[in-house]
Image (cartoon, helix red, strand yellow):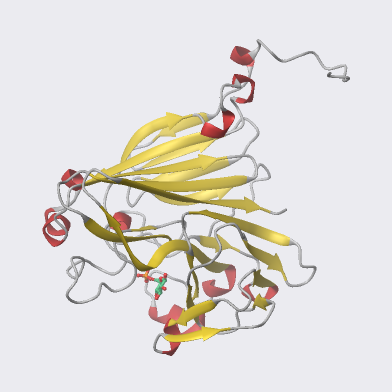
Length: 319
Ligand SMILES: O=P(O)(O)OC[C@H]1O[C@@H](O)[C@H](O)[C@@H](O)[C@@H]1O
């Protein structure tokens, strides 16, 4: 029984403020009536901004990032598909660029829908907004189509909630032969200072250290502290355990990252020297970001003809 004095809200759905979606030539902006907002560029379906109601930006995008489609966007959430890192020789992806083609192809905006989690309860219609983006083989540049000639369809969904952002991908094999792929969401989280955070729930987990010739390591420290170039690919993590970026001062969570169907995770920070070598990244910007990248990259996913595969991440800000 509702003991409050508030009038019951059933039946007033039409009068509730609704999310706003603005379609620009090169990007989509969406916001909730409570003030949270998200921006997604069609180039790469890259989320470039996620703001809380306070206006506080949660994602890092370099001041030197190219937003004109001439280069993958340095920041936000680039989509890595169908290969992570430099493609291996003698593999179907071997002629593709590092991290594949999804982050440097133009996607189409498929429209907005409401979140599945809302079910039939239309009273909550203002609580979230879902933006869907599509990329298919027919939309690829000739160069990419030649390099990876499978028939596929991707639907990437970006859901803005009040305190969190969910991004998910559905991969469909629309051809008549199986293909192999890897997938990762290259999330650049904005932080105040790299020296004031630590990353929890990776204790004693196996990872590949790409900064040391792909050495396989484990670290028994209770949290990962970043004090140098870091490029670690953790493997086979329990999908039920969120990854927490916490303040090293008071241990309060800054971000909690929940994964669905993504058992690998890359932690990346270029640090001083590498930052200097990147033309689309400011020399000191490494302090304001950390990439925490859920993915499926330690082996290949095989997708049979006409089959589909889905996975996602939800990033919650604060507690
Ligand atoms: O410069 P890029 O292609 O965007 O890649 C950035 C980094 O992305 C990370 O995911 C990789 O593990 C790193 O090895 C890589 O340097």
